[in-house]
Length: 485
Image (cartoon, rainbow, N blue to C red; front, side, top):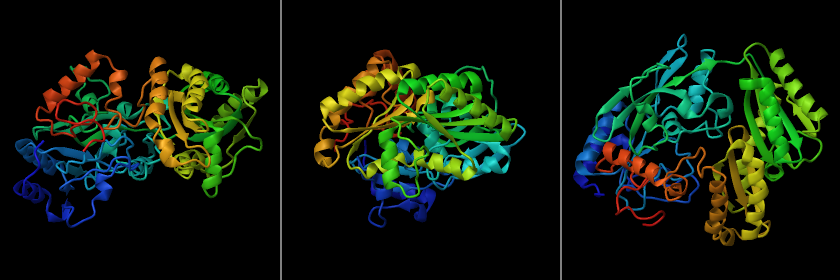
């Protein structure tokens, strides 16, 4: 890929204005060039902050003409280096933060159209202001952006009831690799007129085009909500509870999180203001949320029916039903702070995986001994969205161990964990995407036919490979392997 000339850089700067063309000799660009977990640190000759779709289109036209690589970037909260430039110093970062406007809210039609740079939490707030719900909910919702959520097909805690981002998007506006703009901002829930083009760009991580706006689904706000924290002996008991809860609650069961004792202890130890919701110690826990469109009393009745029965039949040992909104928030804070609490325990190796839900107990029975074999004393720190099969199977260094030595074992631990995931018909990326860090892994979970279909789409829509090159799929021989310079 060509390094942009001084003339090309000036052309880019003229599109967005000098104040929105950030240069490394004038500004510290570390925020834009470092991957969120600091595994990858790239370089860029310029960060562009466009303020409109027209400016994005103009940027892409210049990039296509000059064969300059572009890296679209949202809130920079990803975990697979999908929004970070490489080390070559030739790739231009296109930061979407200024494109954060609400274009329309259609209360009667239950949709809203927002620009790609809108922060997820703001989208949630706008929906709430109109007595509606936008259900995507993530720990990073205070900083992640809608465009990034779309490009990574974000999941989060409410997928069980509402689906992931792919299910929440009705239409898109996308700037294509040739600089043309596709306006697909439709509100139709049924449109059987050929290929569902919007689905090509959801989860594509900016490799096929730059998402500039989206029409999103809204839902009625629940009239009642209950949050329950329950303890049990095994993941098999959690699976039994999940199926029992679904039988009673159906789609009213909006969240079902599985938590091991280890991440709970990390959070109790390192995060101020966190308390154990239960008096006794349990090996595994479930955090469940139930909603009702009828009334608060109905939500409570559903919750009490499910969990009283589970205590009576021995599925769970104990449960705490949040008695107030403040207590609900405390239960959620415990879960949301687990990733940051783990950081206090030194080096960690993280796996964002998905499995057929019924195979989660079997996976955990086999995976934990594998980890112990590969690195004795390593501590499994597992939590995640059991309701939709997504586990964050993280591993912390042994207590008192050395982070450097532990992280040196990353490859062999990954190989063991991912081999088991693949053997169980799972996925090596559930909700964080592929980016650069998992690009070479997906060939093990996709057939040669699938991989060639993906490469064919990339070549067809981005023949000059200017859109986030080297991410998701590799189509040029000159793109070097991951983490090389």
